[in-house]
Structure formats: C-alpha cells, structure tokens
Amino acid sequence: MKSKLLAAVAALGMAALTSQAGVNVNWYVGYGVYPQGAADTTSTTAGTGLLANNGSGQTILQLIWAGADNAIDLVNPGNSGSGYVSDDDVVWASIPVTSGAGGYDEWVFNATPPTYVNATFTAGFVYIRVFQDETPVGGEYYQDSSLLGLNNVGGDATQSQVLQLGTESNGVSTETQIVPEPSAVMLAGLGALVLAIRRRRQA
Image 1 (cartoon, rainbow, N blue to C red):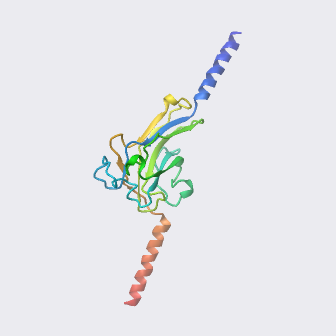
Image 2 (cartoon, one colour; image 1 turned 180 degrees about the vertical axis):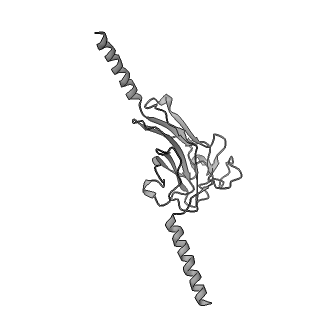
Image 3 (cartoon, rainbow, N blue to C red; image 1 turned 120 degrees about the horizontal axis):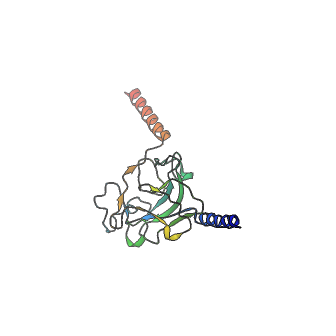
C-alpha cells in the first residue's frame, strides 16, 4: 500500500513538472531603435527613428534561438527563407513593425509586448534582432540584444522570462553592418576586373 502511494505521489509530481515544462519569454524593444551613428537614442522627435530613415516605413523584429553553440551568428542576407540567420541559429518568432507606432518614429514596438510560448522546453539561449529594413541586404545595418539563458518555466505566466532590447528610457542604434554574400562580393570584383580590362584596351 505504501509503495503504491509513493508511486502515485511520484506520478503526480511528474505530471506537474510536465505541465510546466516549456519556454515562456516576454520579448520587446524597451524604448526605440535608431539609425547607425545616432548621437541621441532618447529623442522622441519625429524623423529621428530608424523606420523614418530606411525608406520603406517597415522593418522586422525577431526572437532567435542561438543554436547548439550558444552563440549569436551573423546575418545571412541570402537566407530569406529562414529569416536571414546563419549557421545553427533559428528564428522562433518574427514581427513586422510599421513606422509611427505610439506616435514616435523611433518606437518600433509600442504596444503589449509579445510573449513567445512553447510547451516543449529547449535548452540554450535566445536573443532579439532588429533590422534597418524589412528586406536586409549587404551593407545595411542591424542590432542584436544580449543572450538570455532559457529557464524551464513553461505555462506559468507569472514566471515569464523577460528579454529587452534597449532600456525603458534609452534606445539602441543599429551599429552592426551586414556583410555581403560571397557571391555578391565575387560579382562586384568580377565587374571591376572587366571594367579595368576595358579601360586598358581603350588606352
């Protein structure tokens, strides 16, 4: 009888653990995202923000799992199908952001912060990435948050982990430049070579 009781208690304990297993991350931009080289990342003046300067009025905010190597990998502008990540990084969530949210150009997300929930727990780290433009290309800029180590908090909303890019009173600027794809670099080099040969023949 005692052994059956212990087994039942153990089963209940395992069920409770299973019900709480998973990932629950509240992720957002704290104040705003500004263009590269911005001297002031606290301004609320119209026209100072990232979205007002990229020409399209829209960009992408992503939550990315850092992969088995627990490292933030570079942007791959040729990998649009997987969210422009490289190596073993995986985009878990992506939000298109439109200029003018909250009345300020630089506030890329000024509403109820999104929460990523997955009933299956995955160990490792996540980070936030925001692009200068909705279609990143070589030479443009982006910004990554720091890494957040995942806890097995699951469906308990009171234990949601918080990952924030910037602070509540100071935004961030996009300072990391996207490296062009090798093929694009090779084409540019080939074009320069052809041009040099033509000039030499003309001379």
